[in-house]
Length: 91
Image (cartoon, rainbow, N blue to C red; front, side, top):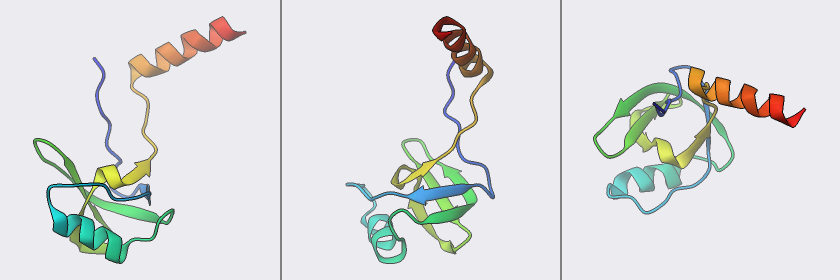
């Protein structure tokens, strides 16, 4: 079973861009406060039924959409095994 892994509190995310989003204030705050390609620190992740919010240490009172950011994720055990299997076939 594949699971989406969210960035952990204290990890870094990089702001890429906003997109059309139901909550226009979240887009406006991101466009007003964040700098494209700048790194920010995750303070809190807030999961909702249809999207994921992120609060940043730099702006703890503002909520942004996680989909505005790039971030590293840890591989699940299943993904690690699949990667290792591909590497064996490549050599």
